[in-house]
Image (tube, rainbow, N blue to C red; front, side, top):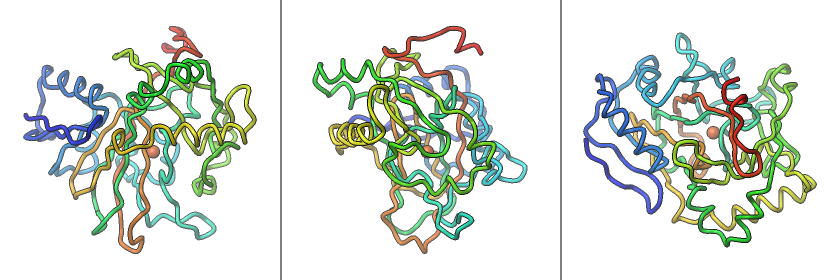
Length: 293
Ligand SMILES: [Fe+2]
C-alpha cells in the first residue's frame, strides 16, 4: 500500500489496495488514521457491486440510512443510494444533488461521520466533487475571528433553512413526515472527537439562523466566512474516473458537486453515509449522555 498526497492541505490517494480483499486490523487502523489526517481518501480502480461497496466502507464505520433512502436507494442495498444528474422532482426540475458547500444531514442529532461516493458513469469533462478543508481553513483565520466563531450555535432545518445560500430542489422529493421533523442545533465550530482539532461546520441549504442573528444576517455572515476559506489551498477537487471510491470526513470538511459540465451527459455515483455521533464544540460542549443516546 502506498500513499500519495493529492492536494495542498487535503486529500490522499491510497494505491495498491483492493477493498474487496480482507484487510488486517493494522491496515484498517492505518486507513482510519490517514482519513482523519488527510480528510479525504481516494481508492482508484475498485470494481464493486453495491453490496461489495457497502461492505468495503464498513472499515470506517457502520453505514446508515440516508434521508433520501426511499427515493434513491438501490434495490437490495438499502444503504447505497444513487446520486444522478438524471433525477427530476415532481415539477420536472432537475435535482441538483449537493450543489453548494455543506456537511451532510446537519438536521440530525447524529450526522454521518463520513460520506463515500463511488463512480459509476462519469461525464467526459467536469462534474468534480469538491471537498473544502474547514479544519485548516478555520486555523488560518485571525484569532479574534476564531474566538467569535467558537461561540456560535446554528440551527438547521430538515428541508431548507431561511439562511440558505441557494434553493433546494430536494425539498420537493422529501416525504411530508421527513420535512415535519424538528430541526437541530449544532455548534458552528465542531471538535473532531479523535484528533481534537476544530473545524467550521454547516450545511449551506439547511442552515436557518445562527443564535443572535436573523436569517438574513446569518446568510451574509456565512457567505463572508466562505469567502475567507474558499481558496484552492483548502480545496481538493476530485476528478472522477469510473470505479473510483472517494470517502471524506464530514467533521473536518464541507463538500459540493460542481455543475460545470454538459448536463446532458450522465453523471451517476453511488453514495453511502457512515454513522456519526453528536457534534460538539466550544459553544456546545461534549455530553456523554447525548453521545450514548
Ligand atoms: Fe452531500
